[in-house]
Image (cartoon, rainbow, N blue to C red):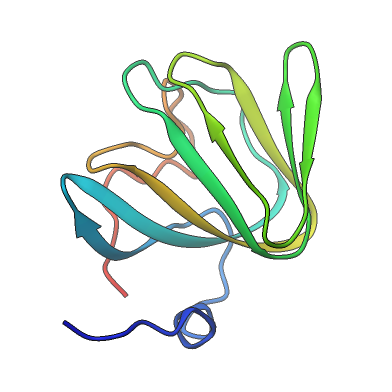
Length: 119
């Protein structure tokens, strides 16, 4: 057991859309990532996703609306819901989702990460 300093962990990488694993509990992964630009439209068949904005502003687009998240705000995207994260400027997020969740869900592209490195 040891405490985790989020700012220290965010300082260890600079790339975008590449989640890093902070820890695991009860079959769930706690990850952090830096996001910038538009991601791919996707959904997760079996997994809900939690997005918690640590720094910046994140927009999550859905087919019928868009939700804007500010620092300290979070959103749970239910499984099966098609969505696209958009970060107009760099955003730091904490993600909470079942272990084994692929970041691009049902899509495969150059930003797909099916293995997450621990930081």
